Length: 266
Image (tube, rainbow, N blue to C red; front, side, top):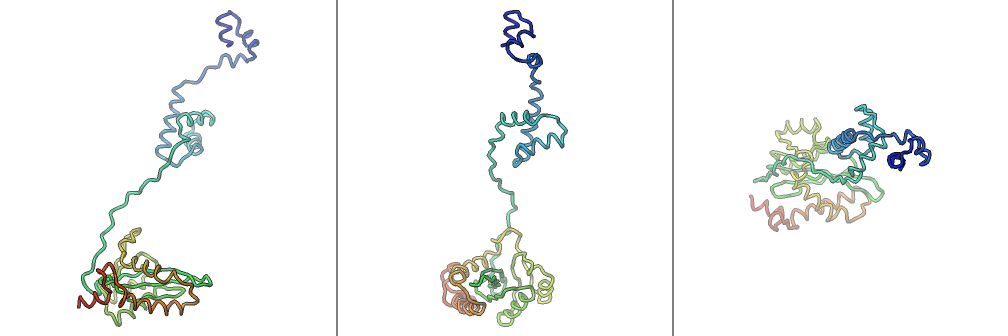
């Protein structure tokens, strides 16, 4: 309006500013070049594209403290909003994973065993662990060892007891837990001429036989009762393991029991 008074009515800039109530510096203010705003916009677009989880705060601090630009935060934020970067949707991205190795299928007894740990609690809230060992050939449960703690020594003792009546396996498949990668277990396996097959980290499907067995244990008896002590759990586990091997049809074996599958292979 002051500029219209100067241009249309021939008033001086001083008089026009007094009439409109503005300062002469405000009258003479010239907006900064659009090229600089474009540079700010380009920086913001690059930053938000390369760092999808960066908000305005990190972008501004990067431009000010890392790159050394002296742009005012209000100006940068105005451009940030004009670009609608404050309305970004940040969808989750899938990590590119290598294709895991296929699960090996044994063709004979004692070719491959699988073992894995489970956890549960007694009714007094004390946690205990279970070590499950099965033969992958006929899905037979070879042992369920349980205690409050099952270090590598207990794992070796359990496997040795099973070998005494079952025979020695060619390989034992397990995950990368600390009890399995310990030097004690590896040394014992070397003396016994048993190969330890570690699954790839993050691929439990490579140990699918014992993982499926764990699910059966969990839903058929372990999570169904409140356990008073370890003796009660051990007694129930022993009885259930006999029923699982001799009386419970296994759908993965075509509806027969593990002992029937073992007899057919004899």
